[in-house]
Image (cartoon, rainbow, N blue to C red; front, side, top):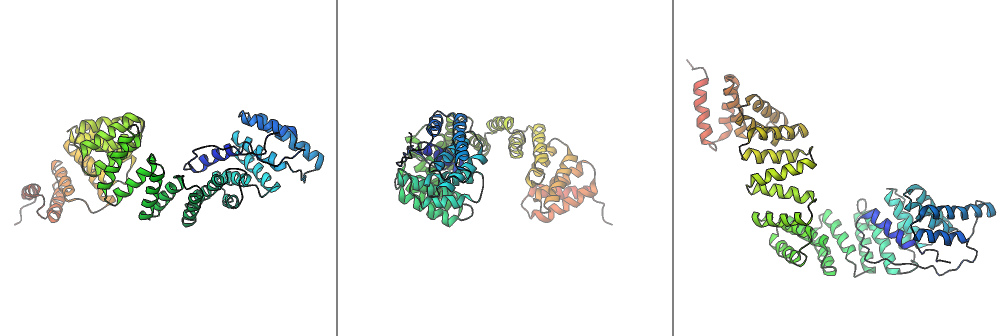
Length: 448
């Protein structure tokens, strides 16, 4: 007969991945329960064979047959010593069938039948965490106090990792303590350090985060996540000179890692090294053509570098996949505006305004594009919309609206905005100030 928990490690690995997304499993272990229970029904071993073949439906049928027979023989309060094994296997099979609630119920019965089993408590805690059930903490904490059937340190470390991930949002200090416990148990595993670094960074404990990322890199020099985390810290603190050589070294060692090229491109862009940054982002996209973040970064960088034709093409490609993204419409509109494609630019700014009506800057963009198209009514409406969001308009906006009123021969409103412009310009816009004064001479009634 197979061991009671021959299939327990695979389900733990599945659940760890589903619940956290951050657990690192570098190898899978198989546990063999040493106690032999002679009266275990043959259906249990048959079910475990089916589970090994991913035939979860057959496994469920066999396990339910054994459990039903035991209930008929011994009643609902049966104390048969193999029950926790059957309920554990049933929880595994039901999880494989994506029946989460039933899987949780089966694991609960396994724990109730034998509360001191590490694997049952861990799996139940993980399933409850995945279901956002607050009871998860109780069972994960219980697992940290119990001894796994095999690979003791690795199993206990997984329990502490699972508990830490669960506690991150509500009890960050306890989560960091749990990561330290996991690290003590598996000192060669970079995962606890990486997760602790990410949490420290979110808590704005940047020096602690830096130490954790460095430790993760020392344990796994190929950890892209640790390298990116560390260079993000360098960028936040203005230490770009430290970020660039680290990323260049890592990118040279791993030329096929798109994430490293993307991060290096961002660091170079932050230093104003636009051409080098563009080359790195282009490399990242060759390696990962579907990376939307890299596509957007490259489009923005083209725009910053004044490569407006390339920016236009990049924004258009992004908009085919994200037609309701206001920022992309604005980016495309600005690239078109700088190429003097005023009519197309106006349409993009209008789209951006419709999608995000509380965005003051895009109203100004729309006003400038409409003014170039001699659509003075739209210019005025755009700037009026800008005023409704924030009365403090840039000085040139008053001049622009005054000019639009002037073209429409609404001299009364034009004069009001020309005067407002002159009050706030303070000599910063000499050409427009000269024009405003001369237009006021022309349009205002002469004083007698």
